[in-house]
Image 1 (cartoon, rainbow, N blue to C red):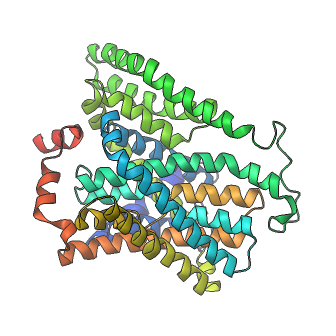
Image 2: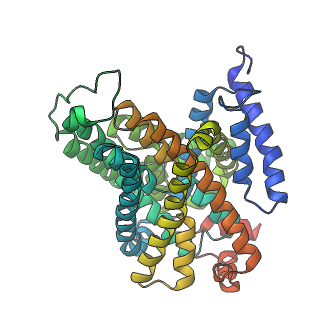
Length: 429
């Protein structure tokens, strides 16, 4: 067990140390280091013998990683970039999510679960992990290519849709009442504001947050960094960047009901429009990488190997829906929207996994008695296995020389578009 007198330090030491060890092993096996980070989390998780780290502390550290990573993504985008790929990403995300939700719901129905449970299970399988996608693209220098931009915008659209879904779930639980899964505890009480009052309220809060960032943030954030930059202290500038990212994300979550990840992303988008965007991206990079590792370790700690052993067929079907079903649908949608085959293939491979929003949705579904614990375990097992498979597929693609790794894309990655300032600064250094 982790010593009780220093749980935070011990958790960080165990997570970083084992992540480094297994990350090196995964890299030697030509797999993504993500696989090693997940294995490290499984080893220090509560479901395996040996060292057991503090899972709640690890999850909070992982949240910081998600915030910094999404802030960094925002620093690579401008509003014009989002609009330019939105005509592909937004309809693609909507249609793919609908198909993936249907496939997951059919599987849940075949397992004998009620319609509400099937819907929640399907929704949890429909959204991919932005964190996983970014690491896969970064490892292969595809972050600045056209497929990379489309895939990132695709997931941002999915994340925004999932925020609305999380708001609607308590409403769904109140509507269904006794039709939800059986539980010894009473169902969540009906909402005092009425069944549908929370929905327009949540959308209004999201709108106010975006307007504040566009109107106030575009003036205040660059002004603050300009004054800090004049001090001539790199440490103060770095601290200002982190303070802006974390405080914006936290304020978005607490005051406006926006997820931490989306709040940080929009803060990065606003900052990218200023002259400090490139420098801010470079200054925040080391901490982003470290805390992103903690995210994957934390995800690995959720894995209960007994679930896979107890329900092998259900786990396999869940994995097939995530890796094969979602990927095939994304590939066909991208082709239908006019993308080249190699672009569609990279987009589909990038989205063939699930992650952080699936975890959040599964936990909320269990707490509202819309999802049994077995469903949550299947979602987590499917997430971890899909991340591992996704990394392995990309590794095989690199070895086999599939068209997604063509020389033209490699050249584009080495000379990224104008908006990708961080990679240009790296190349020049």
